[in-house]
Amino acid sequence: MAKARFDEKYHTTLRFELQKKLGLKNIMEVPKVSKIVLNVGVKEAVTDSRILQHVSKVIAAIAGQAPVITKAKKSIAGFKIREGMPLGVTVTLRRKVMYEFLDRLINVTLPNVRDFRGVKVSFDRQGNYNLGIKEWSVFPEASSGSLDKVHGMNITICTTAVNGEQAHALLEGFNMPFRKDNK
Image (cartoon, rainbow, N blue to C red; front, side, top):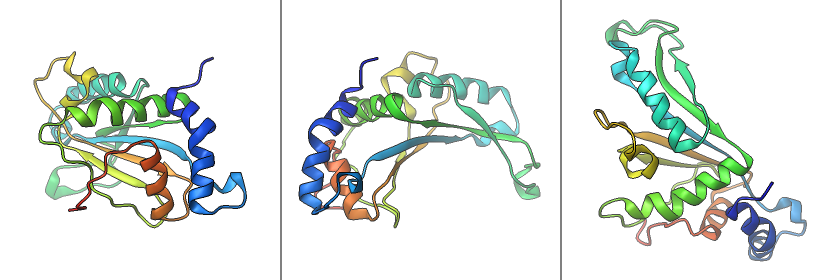
């Protein structure tokens, strides 16, 4: 089984560069991408549950893996939501599929965004990165299906970094197009 391009890059060059750049003594301390989670909330699913089937097919095409339908944890009368009602889909990518998705995201999808100036640099305390996509139509896999309704999605890149600086260096090593002005 052949390794994904980014997996190969991480294990051959990037890992050693990061160890030197971050001043880490042990190679096992070097941060890595542990998983990528794609999440789509569908408010229209409250009235029509068939919409989730369409969203699920498109997310499966984008991720290369079947998603799981997420359900409401509690009832909210104001939004007409009952506990257990299906409201979205999520998929967790690991290993080869994760690296292939990250490669497509950085080198194909993000450059296709109109008026793209880079992504904002914002990491949480644990070194995870969240990226919001307003329209899934920027993914080439989504344009092959019917586009009657376009949804946004949240992409969370989870790392083993201990802080945002390490995670930033890791994603920068994969050529993540961060904004220079950071606005």
